[in-house]
Image 1 (tube, one colour):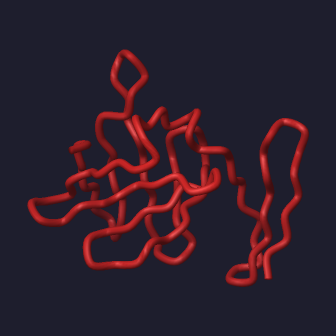
Image 2 (image 1 turned 135 degrees about the vertical axis):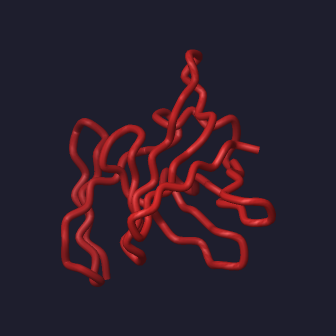
Image 3 (image 1 turned 180 degrees about the vertical axis):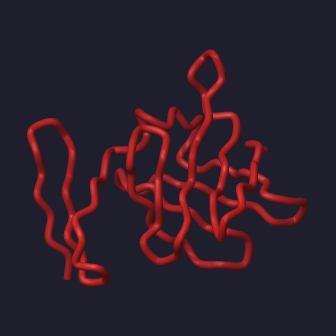
Length: 114
């Protein structure tokens, strides 16, 4: 069971059963400026990371794996709670996301948007 606290600024704090830790969650679409509700980033040939926004919650799904929710540390830095990883999104001069970097197990993988 999850507990949520909504603030006047549009930020939600969530306490979940997995870690009983407070997480900041933001409405991701305005920050990410994704072109649609689904974007694909190529980590390596044949292995993609699909990013979706579902009801204001950012989720990611790697090829052959299930979707996992990710939570905001900032406007461009996110983390899942089910695996030890960080995802940073990088924008061009027009503010559009062009690639992400997945930081996991001491490695940084750059994934351009397809």
